[in-house]
Length: 274
Image: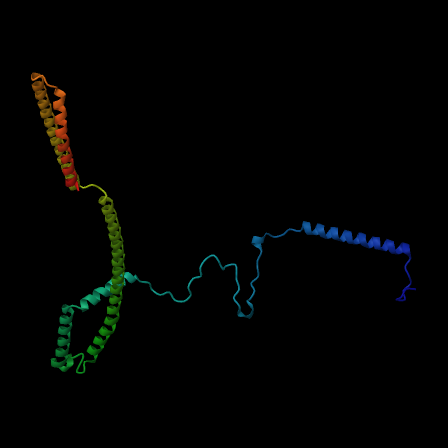
């Protein structure tokens, strides 16, 4: 007997029962796989996805929702207009209202209106005294004129701002160009300060010409003196030969006389240089 009170199974019969159960499970699995392969599946494009109501009033994504496109605006579509054209039109009206012609025409209309509703017969008066309709028209005209004038002023302020920015940009460019030209002119002036000018060259050439003339004049004088000295020597030598005297003695005397003369001239030249 086992613990639960059932008789024990025989060892041979239990093993056969387990093997039969395994064979039945394998056969069932093969049959299920065969049936699953033979079934015809419908394509995905033909599958119908049932609609499900959203839970707790939450928004859900459907197949019609495109996440790659912006959502369209809901609500009534307002008419669109060109702001530039409307601005030009408002500026034209504001300019006309600021002229003497508009003031003159408005004065004529008001005088005619008041005169007609005061002097005309009672049956023909369409706006009797207190002129309620005229007051309403003038108030409407004033209520529309103020925004139009403000719009024109805003456009003019925008134009003035753009013009001021352009002026500042041009002023900055002109200032930069002026500073650049000033630097270039200063650099050219510094470079030209080390270059010889025409007047300087003329003065130097004139000084050199004068020095050359003085040197030539001195050489000419020295040549004349040498020539005169040679002539004197030749004459004295002839005289010495004529009187049977030694000509070298006369040359020594001449050198002795010429030496102090040369020394005196050299001393005068030194004093002049100092």
